[in-house]
Length: 287
Ligand SMILES: Cc1cc2nc3c(=O)[nH]c(=O)nc-3n(C[C@H](O)[C@H](O)[C@H](O)COP(=O)(O)OP(=O)(O)OC[C@H]3O[C@@H](n4cnc5c(N)ncnc54)[C@H](O)[C@@H]3O)c2cc1C
Image 1 (cartoon, rainbow, N blue to C red):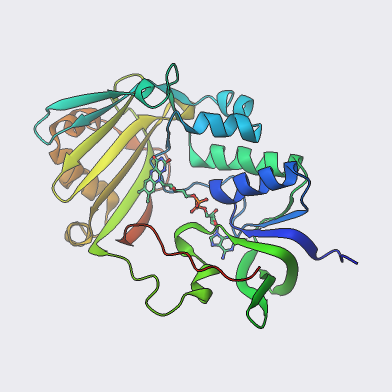
Image 2 (cartoon, helix red, strand yellow):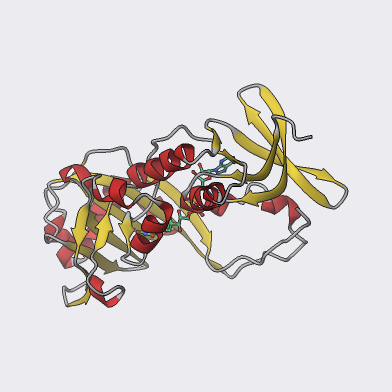
C-alpha cells in the first residue's frame, strides 16, 4: 500500500521543465511530487524572451490566461545590431503565424507555472533541496530531500531531474567521461531589470560586441530586462562590477550606447558563469 511519502513521479526543480512535466502528469492523474530549493516567486538569470512557439505550450498547460494577464510586453520583432550599428530585424511571426513573442520575467512566468501545478494537485515542496537519489542497487526509487536541518526520503516509481544546469541528481549517475562537453573559453552572464532604457517599442534588441552579446527587451512593470554574456577575462578586467562591464563592454555597441545611456538598474544584478555549451548525454537508469 502506498504511504504518504510515496508518489508515482518525483521531480526535482520547479523551472519550466519541472513544472511543465508535473502539470502534464498530474492532469493525466499521476500523483506527483515537485521539489524546489528556492521560495517562489524568485528572480532568475534569463533573457526573459518567450518565443511565440511557447504560447502553444502555455495553452496546453492551462496557463495562457495567467501569462497574458501578467502585463508582459508584446514583442513583434527581434533586431540584431552589429557593433557599428548595422541592423537586421526578424519578425516574431516567422516562428508562429499571427503571434508575437512575450517579454515576461522568469519570476512571474515560473511562479504562474508553479501555481498551476499546485492547482492541478501536484504536491509542492519549496525551500527543499533534492540532495541525493534514493537507490536500491541499480534502481532509482526516489529522492533524498533536505529541508533546513531535516532530511527525508520520498519514494517514486519514476524520478526526474529537472534542476537545469545544476543536474543535481543526474550527475550522480554519470558514467566517467560520458558528459564531457565541448569546453569554451569561460564566459559570464549577467542580468538586471532596468528603468529608462530606450529600447524600441515592441522589439527585443540584440547587441554584438567583442567576445559576447546581450539582449534588451521590455517585461512587465514598465521596465526592460538586460541580459548579456561576456568573456570571463573581460569581467575580471572590470573588477567583476556588472555596471562597469555594461559601460566598458556592452555599450561599445553603438546602439547599446544609445539605448542604455540613461538606464539604471531597478533590481539586483544576477550573474552565472558558463563553462560549456551543448546537449548533455543522457544517463538513463531504471526508475
Ligand atoms: C544567459 C542566458 C540567457 C537565456 N535567455 C533565455 C531567453 O531569453 N529565453 C529562453 O527561452 N531561454 C533563455 N535561456 C535558457 C533558459 O534559461 C533555460 O532553457 C531554462 O531556464 C531551462 O529550464 P529548466 O526548467 O530546465 O531549468 P531552470 O530554469 O534552471 O530551473 C531549475 C530549477 O531547479 C531548481 N534547483 C536546482 N538545484 C536544485 C536542487 N538540488 N533541489 C531542488 N531544486 C533545485 C532551481 O532553483 C530552479 O528553479 C537563457 C539561458 C542563459 C544562460
